[in-house]
Image 1 (cartoon, rainbow, N blue to C red):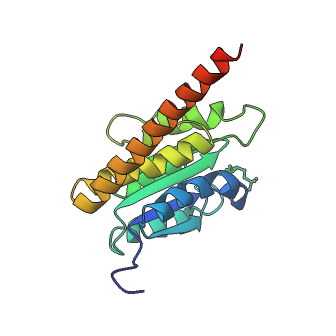
Image 2: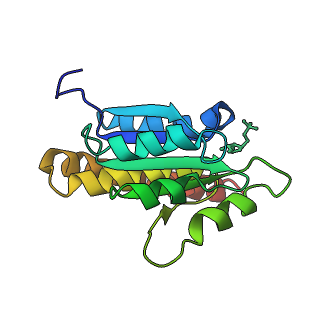
Length: 172
Ligand code: RP5
């Protein structure tokens, strides 16, 4: 892989059962043209693989990690304890507790090891990628402009919804 396509963001998930949610992060990075990789690794089931990934990521050029996991979701915290890269945690719904377990396990990090925790589920995966875009845009003016355009488009969609609502009101 050459430098132009070497991944800048690593998306990690605890199981392939997390794919349907975590692909939302991949879609955002794809749309912004940010090269990324996706990896399945588990804090509990494959601790050595997780350790190897976390120790090698920065050396391979990765700048940010987005880490999704469900249940007793220790993956983001464990990875953040090993690497110095910014780690964005995405709690996932995988048990009867519907993501509350993963949210608390991801967000309640002890002082000293930060994990930037997003919302549970698809919104969290999407926002995790947008948070990565914001970080990378700090020293990439073209990406910053693309992100500004993204926000403007979102705002225009809300305005259009408001105008459509006014039409419906007139028909009441
Ligand atoms: C977590 O356990 C994974 O991130 C996943 O959300 C959950 C269930 O994994 P599977 O039993 O579906 O492999 O580690």
